Length: 201
Picture 1 (cartoon, one colour):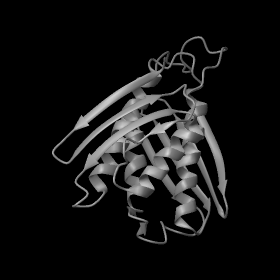
Picture 2 (cartoon, one colour; picture 1 turned 60 degrees about the vertical axis):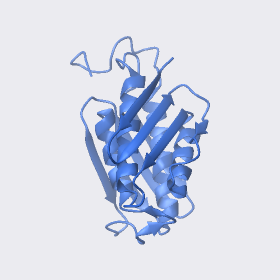
Picture 3 (cartoon, helix red, strand yellow; picture 1 turned 90 degrees about the horizontal axis):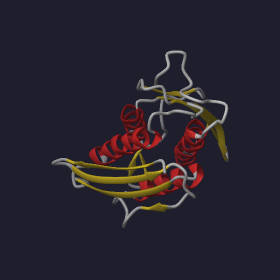
């Protein structure tokens, strides 16, 4: 079983995430994070990546959503890193181009053991159009995925190829990430150890 349970408790947040890579796409958000749109995105990540995901997350939402979303990204990334184990036999790389109405998003990942994050808008925009989607601060999209990439020790790249509606763009990002990560973590019977000339990842 390729799974992990990670806890993080600070003066700002209390987060527990359980992740099963070879799941069926079920999410248990244990009453929710307190940010409805974020719950929707985590559920979409689990469903479209076919991961089983359990999340218990509480934070200082009276301040804003930053600490909760950022720390959830850290914990999810660490869960990915622990669940994938020594990476023997996995494809390592994954990518997906996902359409959602007018939005089109490319995501690529490399489970290389080196964190790096890029988010690039190719449609002439320098970010999202609105400051909020529901009760979710759109600036936190970058913070979340940056934290995931560093927690997982992965390269994570996004290119927003088109899109006008922030809800559509963000949801396409979460779903594209799920599909790319699913591809990268899949076993390939031709790979006997790790997919690296160095012999380790």
